[in-house]
Amino acid sequence: MSFWIVSIALLALALVILLLPLVRSNRVQQGNQRQRQNIQIAREQKQQLEAQLADGEIDQASYDSALLDLQTSLALELENNEDDSEKLRGKWMAVVVLLAIPLSSVALYLVFGEYRVIENPELVRAAPAQQTAAAPQMTLDEMVVAIQDRLRANPEDAEGWFMLGRTFMGKQQYGEAVTAFQRSNDLLADEPGILFALADALAMQNNGNLLGEPETLVKRGLELAPSFPNGLWLAGMAAEQRQDHKAAHRYWTQLLPLIADNPDSTREIKGLIAMLEERDPELASTASTKPTLNVVVDIDAELKSRASPGAAVFIYAKAMEGPPMPLAVRKLQLSDLPATLTLSDDDAMMPTMKLSTFDQVIVGARVSSSGNPVAQAGDFYTELEAVDSSNPPAQIVLTIDQVK
Image 1 (cartoon, one colour):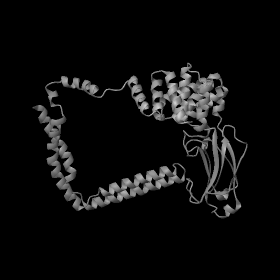
Image 2 (tube, one colour):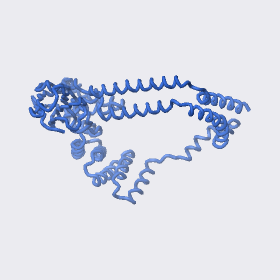
Image 3 (cartoon, one colour):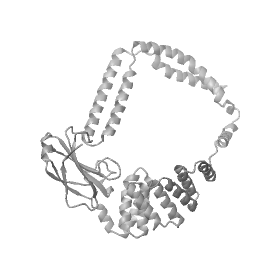
Image 4 (cartoon, helix red, strand yellow):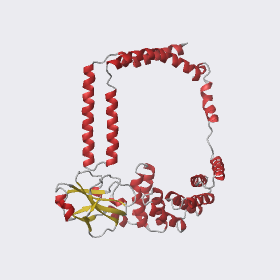
């Protein structure tokens, strides 16, 4: 009996909390003031976004997404400022809530609840076993059988073969995993993720030895996807097995910012890098030396005459393969050209995405009359591809002579 008394008291408290906002009347003047405050806050937030975009702190896609969120939020806030007719509807809603919640709560509890547990606590301990029996998890052996049944029905299912390979890896059946990954690779030629998985399986089949065919597969995968974390990990392991500590150090240093959101993996890679630097102290001094690109920038005379002297000029370096956001960027004015400058890790837009992270980069310069750091139609620009950031030319000459 005490259970129902407590339940009714809690239900009454919930009704009070729900009904107060519905039955109280807000003054129109207060609503208008709140509306003006919301608009002013939104205007200030929009100005902050525009400033971040102009300073290069965010790209155009991030700006557009944030602006859409801001507009949606403002629209919802303004919509929630009820007029007098909505207040009347709120009072009718209070009546509905007053009747519907108690009736529906009791009915739902009687149908789905377990009120018998008050008299029989053993039901609590029995429930987990019943739930486990109702929704058993598949074992690895059962997963293999299920995937094999799927592949018998569709032997050209590359994803199914890849899943089968991953399952065999979990069972430490490396020979079967190699066969499955090889079949997946035959169906989807030169897919980096499959190449790395096949290399890993071949190495595990040979007691972890990555030299030979596994390393060849890893190198092929990195040619297609230079920033693939698993590929960089395996490439570092292969280089370490070859006693090429410098290459291993380079691969694992490049991997670090890509796994920044995984503390355990970051800790492991830092430990491996520290081990290499202990073996070869020169690696530590090499790592502390920041790559620097010496850039000379100028613009075609005819294009220069078509732009304002105050137009913004962005000089940047970005990864050949990887995120589109620049790894390093400097901002000048058209009137500053010709100019000589350097790009380094000090010019990074994000601390985890630096020039030293990537070996191959694109170096470019762009004139933006709007001042927008994101490329737009009508901008003047030039780009030089495949620049080796670890061993760059003594001077990189850029002449802006193209129109986007």
